[in-house]
Length: 444
Image (cartoon, rainbow, N blue to C red):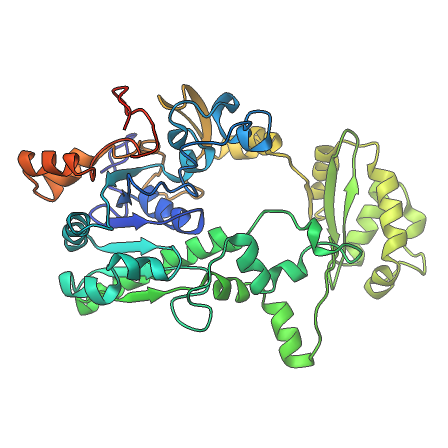
């Protein structure tokens, strides 16, 4: 598969990845592989809908008018909501979809054939999932000794928490991140549902798999990667844990502040507009005072060194807030950046989508998908490579979109075998036993 704009071979062309990932951590990892040109094949079940990735095939009544409806185009889930959700519309790009019921012998045989023809298998279900399906690494390595399998459940595949289940909120609580988020005067009910652990684990998984692919070149052997999302997150919070290891001190929530610098979030003109700035030294403090027209504060004994500024942080916050409150956040951003002061506007999603910097760098691509009934802008690959330009080559696959190619062309099933698997409800484009219509309008 090559990039559509210049036919330049992509970095991971020739690598085939089996994708049995859910929610966000795993789909993010496989998205990175598909962006780089690997053939990523999602294995999906018509009997067990993946409501965490594609979405609920039967959204509850009363969905319209609630925040959850905003995940669909025009807030309408339509007749096939599993092909209209925003999350999969993004993470499913450049991927293929095949259907098989791995709870039955015929479906496992399909999977085993695919494993024999693949380089990588990624899954991030609860640890007992692959055991229940009979597709653990111990089984697969005998089928394909060169296969690299990566499991990235919440807590890894060994240890006391092995079979514990968890979403981002649960994993981040266990690994200590939730305790460090928020403000000193808040309890933890105010923690927002934005969880770094998911994409962080996905990025780490992609790096580990690439390392294993390089190792396979040297040894000719695959291997198993056991990645805990919680442990991955712990290693990204080194200051807090090393502070306790070395000093016995439990770090508390700091809100927007910094342990070594003057840092805060300040209101700007308009509804809920803010700007964040950091003052790292006396020179930056002097520049800020001049920008605010408050040169008398440069040598004020309350603020004339960093220790004093941190000690009198509340006073500084009041002074800066009074200056920013009648100014546009991007105006403050540009003014302070021109003076070499780290500063950034608190951008809303619409600000990010229209940011001229992101637009000039070509981050966004507009694509049409018939299931979404419209063309929309999508964030594309998040980096540039000078010799191998990357882009969204195709949007997300519909359920079972690539069944014929994978079963017949890739795995060698005959037309007769294919038809039989259709009759056995392994192959299709609609979830069974839910009273839903397939693409032909038939109830299945």
